[in-house]
Length: 370
Figure 1 (tube, rainbow, N blue to C red):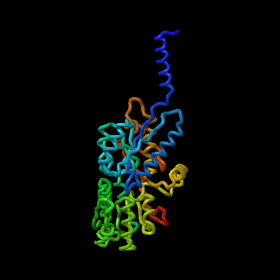
Figure 2 (tube, rainbow, N blue to C red):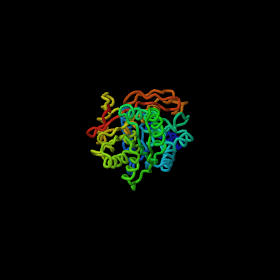
Figure 3 (cartoon, helix red, strand yellow):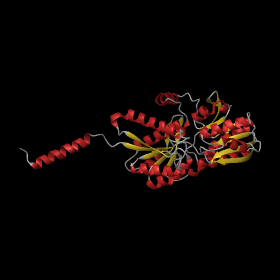
Figure 4 (cartoon, rainbow, N blue to C red):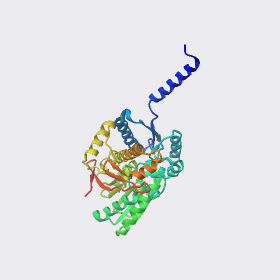
């Protein structure tokens, strides 16, 4: 009979063998976005895009690599809740975080991510307040100074608009104020005038008719909305009732499927800036649209595409990360990644630049504007 010492040795050997054969610890990715409340369309679609990227990664690697686990938190578009969600993800020892999805929350979280040394890969966050910062905040879309200037040039040169009123949601002030500022600077340089800016904080008790009346006080030729899709749809209905032939435009934030769904006939002809080229016929993009629609039962828009790209960049970085590198260092070493609609090239601060697409809603679809 073997003695106690041999029994202990055998037990240790079996334990080590069991540990070696067990599945490796998963790679934990955090996700932060607004998943509840009246403006949850942005966060829900972004969550779907990130989830799809993770599912495809896990299916492609099979048993050859570590599985990726997406740990999801809801910030309700609230910076304070975003901080709480980020702290919870740090307790889960996530390797990186996808999100948040609004500039207001991103500005609150970027310093925390830098302090913690955890990469924060933003979704459709384009505030210029995070430009050129040596921090842990990265993104796969350009700053809104580029996008706002394109819209200003389009309205001035293609539509000969000279007088514009703005309606902006200060609940996401880090985005809306910088977008409005860059728009007005470019528009006025082209000879136009920004007549007034009507600001509000998004809530369920807003008087949209009053906001519309206020924006029309100085008889603008066009009204530009820098708001969520829900608020844009409700405001456009009120603006149409008061001035049916008014030229109406929106920033990218409103350009999701929710705007068309809620706006109905009132949003026909509305001019919408977009991060996404919906007329792209490339195999990669059309495959994504089909797979996304089959998986989630809805069309993919800019939130889904942005989060999908952001997640794939992070996953590639984790796959190619060297033992002596942080994820930030890996991404800055690689710099160039393939997005669904072209290359994503990071600069030294983790910022990038992408085209702006000006669309017009026609028969419930976003079409390239003339």
